[in-house]
Image (cartoon, rainbow, N blue to C red; front, side, top):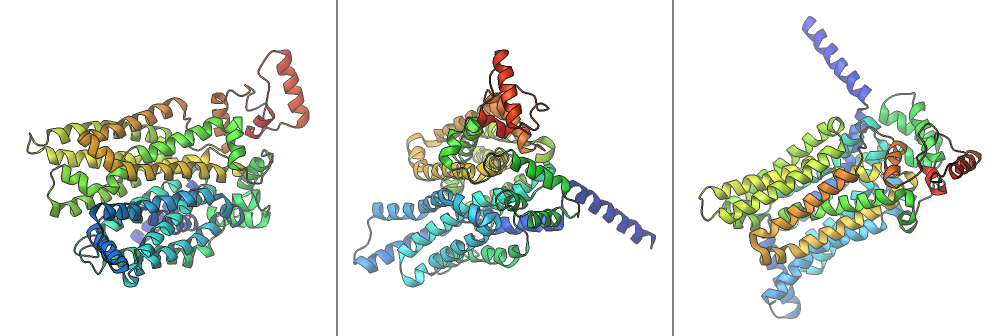
Length: 532
């Protein structure tokens, strides 16, 4: 009895500590379910095309021959296969371009739920394409799945960032990256020869599995609240916003959280959605936008997608025997998940800045070492194994920092009125770079050989240098505090935070007049929104 009592008391203390930190059952369930039906699918569809490549090419050739009466030439088949793979990124780009519309009218949760329609439709088209003998269905299905991914990778970070307490916002935000890695790993497992990747008749089931996460999300997410910030700032629904905070935070008194959101709402000149064009014109957001663009471009161009898309060819070049490649590839997926979990556990202690900068810096280092090992592997018998270690090190470096933090930053650097357009800009840059890597990497690899990874090393190093000089720490900061940090970079007024807590029209005129008399930089009307 004493042992049982001691154990229960210990569990109660742990539960109280987690609740104090902001972790509640409802918050965790919302994060896991929303990520499973969103970022998991993105990761899964990146890796799922690798294993059945040979069988899909056979299907493409057979369906073309049945349709037109002649077999495809090798170049035409390669082109059609490239279109099948890269159309996923085109769909993602379209999704990123249109995401600001549904998140405004349907909300963050509503957009995630509606987006499942694209996932289910894409799963049906791709899985039934072989039965119908239509390669067009496969291509269209891949496009629609990409559309789902483009919307999900913007709406999901918005939702997670807005329902999370600021002290664990980074850890919750990293769930996006963790589930991307879980999706990649699941695609690798199901693609093993012993499972669905070893027979010509089973590859459609690989694509049909997309329906499972979508159905799970549709079954659970409707019972959880919409983003309280969205409800209060954009829908002016005080009652539902308060209930949302109470559910996610697990407490009745949410006065502090409501006041914080209302303060942000008051400081916005317009709570309606700011368009992309207007956001690009806002001088108070100039360096935030540049930072998001640089971070998202570095995220895609640093070379990890090249490793994901072309793992088999890279391992072949590293001297690995073909029958061993699926299992070595599987180990990289496990490393991705482990590194993402480490990042989630440390992001609130170490902060976004060191993990992001360190991740890019170590990627540059290990890409350089990988280049050396690839060039020496014919001279030293154990060098191929060292190449595998460097590839795993690159993946781990990416997942610890750059793999998930860019999505967190995009949500943290912008207020409620600008956030949707910011994700639209970041998503557009991300998917364009994703498409560019998938399209150009084979040509870069053909032209430069093993030296191609020096290109990625340079991009990762450039990203680390930029962020070192221009990215402030956003850990445990409110939007107003983050905005004040960027105000220095944006060359705004030097008015202190205490002086700018509540700037009314009369105070604005008074401070402006004082600055003119003392020959100080004046406050622009656009700056007032950055005040606390």
